Amino acid sequence: MFAGEKTRMLGKFLASPLLTFDSTVGRSFCSYDAILGDEDKKKWESCRQALSAYGFSSEEEDKILGKAFGQIHSPYWGEERKKEVPKFELVSEILNYIKDLGLTDDDLGKLLKKFPEVLGCSLEHELKANVQILEKEWGIRGKTLRNLLLRNPRALGYNIDCKGDCMAQCTRCWARF
Image: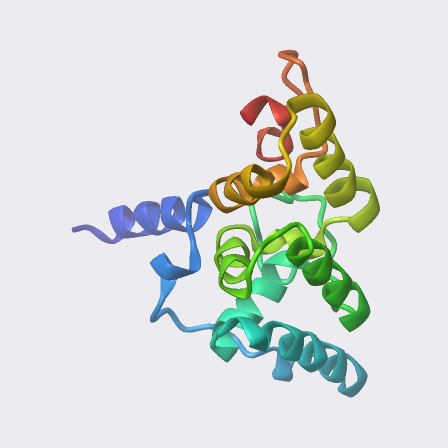
C-alpha cells in the first residue's frame, strides 16, 4: 500500500457517518485534562460521572462527550457545532428524559454508542419535539418508540425537514426517517 492510499483510506474512515465506538476500540485518544482549565475539568469530570452508570470506559466517556459538545468532529453537526464544555445538569436532564421513554440503562448505553451527539441536542427543541412528532404523526410510542430509538437513535436529533427539496443537511433531516 502506498502512503497516499493509506491517507485516503484513513480520511474515508474518519469521515464515515456509520462509525460507532466499537469500530474504533484500541485507537488512542487525547485526554481533555491537558486542554481544559481547572473549572472546565471539574465540569467535564462531573459529566463523565453521569455516564459512568452505563458501563463505559473513561476513553468512551470522553469520546461521547467530545462528539456531543464539538470537541471531536462529527458529521452530524457538520461545521456548525462550536466547542463547549458540557454541563452536568444538562447531560443528566437528557439522560433522564431518554430513560423515561422506556429505555433501560443497557439500552441507553447502546443508544449513546450509536448517537453520542444526542447529549448535545436541545432537550426542548429537538428531543421532546421529535418524540412528539413520532407520537402524533407516526403513532409511535411505548415499546415501539423504545425499539425505534435503539434502531435509529438519530431520530431524536432530526431538526430539518426538507420535504424532498434537499437542504444538504442530510444527517439531521427527517427525510432519512
